[in-house]
Image (tube, rainbow, N blue to C red; front, side, top):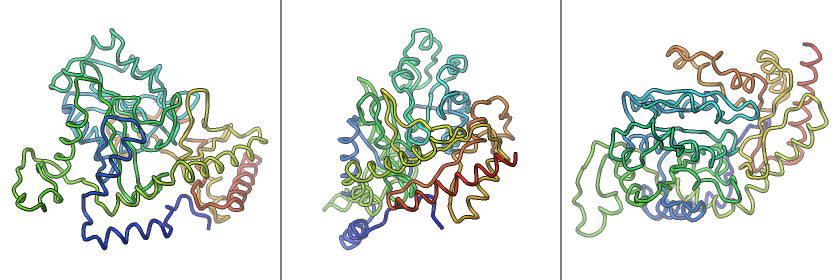
Length: 406
């Protein structure tokens, strides 16, 4: 069986983890802080906070911005459930937008009509590692007519004076936008370091703060760290210093800190990310693209244009004139040939919770059209050229058999 996306666990990773285990300090400590500093330098943002997931990091940002009951947050209908779930956690309302007809990302042109005085945040998602047009989103929320609709109800909202843009960049660590690494283009960006991501910490994520003056990104980052550790004013490492046992609880916070065991995996991955990981993932994606380009049923995923470069996180194959039942049959045939593939994603209105809450798939036709013909192929560092050829061959054969029988 060729797996879909196993993590890269080699001697360097194992040795780094063992070193932390032997150090006697395994929870949040110097490795976590170093990873934050390295990501800040890599992305060029004001401050980075590493936590146990991007999901929790994003929720803390929503709460810091005062998002709650009566507010609205705009998200794409085509995304993983975490993007919307965190909005539900705050008590705010999820407002869904359709996908762009040309790619998997949120359709910017549809957003203006969805913005109301209750809109506090827009959260676009870089599906598959393909960046949204960040500048266009920042321009939208800065338009005088859009700003005039904004009704601040919290000190952070009053200080910003407009809708907050949080880039859900869970897939796009290392992607490029207008020549710069993704992360610094919107108010807040977040990356996932889950086991299947390009850069993993096993579980984990980072929130990158790039709020405009007069916001103090470092101070906000520290407040998020406090919120992530029960509202405690000192973390365990600080308390271990001689005579520093006392602390305070300044809020009823949460528990979502990153540990040094996880952080050192990320540090090891980051050391070889640009020179090794990204180039190999790009090779694999371009191999698939070149292989399938010979077939008229192939719809290429977005990978690179004049202003954007993917992080090569997913190869999201689309099949022309393919319906959902046909796509499912293709996947069954591929699985029977011992190749693992996936689908990214089931749009939110197809999921029981959101369907039962009244969201209708027919209101998001572009998202459904993308979903019903999409298959994600294996892309990971240790996938060999021979295995990639096997994947492509198996998928081609399954597609052609199903299309011929339709």
